Length: 382
Ligand code: 5CU
Image (tube, rainbow, N blue to C red):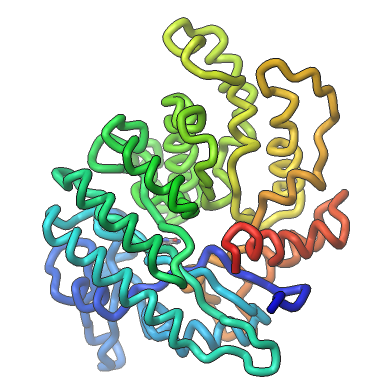
């Protein structure tokens, strides 16, 4: 049965499944969850995943692991469907054999989390889908990775997989990953590329700026570098049907893509390696619309719309087409991160992203509803 029109679909929304939470609770080094007794004598859970967490870690609660909380959050914000992914740092810190076993278990857990969620009876909508996990850690075998790609491809509610930027230790441009890209492409899974490590913290200086620099800049810079390395490695020439979704609207890549193209042209090491101008590959990407501002969304959609112009041999002269670019952008919330700091009915991190979609100059109502939901329905075959 076709889905009703005008759905709101959240493709950037995370969970720490109970099995993963139990692992974090059992650990004494980061990443971990620990219980503390706060100044009022009340026990509280604290999450430590990043290098510069506020002292003692940040408060963490059921919104990170309880499906009811996810569904309540969706209801409160009018979100019909969520494509849920495990939050960082995934399995990166585990030895290969444990990462392999846990990936398989967590993928089954996520399938169950999605498949047993109540649907909205009046609209016949399945509400939850997921991105699986690969055991991308050093010393994992290719056959173990292929095994898990196959598992994800066979689980009906998993429509893609989330990955960080380290690959199996040498980044995503590592030739050893080529069989994995081939298998992902063949299975028709969407790769959601998400940051965790940021960039060298020495760039942030000595002032206490809380979490702002690593999150606002470090996260998107990390994604920018990883996606650029993938482009430079020729992965999109070798696997032209690979579908890659970049977190945080692709970070700085859209703003730097013409500079990237120029640097490639002037560099004999890579100039002859790629089949197309670098800007062509931007048009192959999908980007979340987690940018918090309409001008940024409009700019990004302009940049990704002009790919045809840069296809080798193309004589296309068309001006950027904001509307065409919007087809590759998808609403997300980053839930459960960025909760409101004071009591409020709705989460600002959600309403800001929805308002931004609403306010992009040059997007038609059809473009906006595409970004809010229909693009996700098509990309993930929901
Ligand atoms: O606030 C944060 O640390 C994060 C994080 O770790 N991962 C994420 O997806 N968003 C925010």
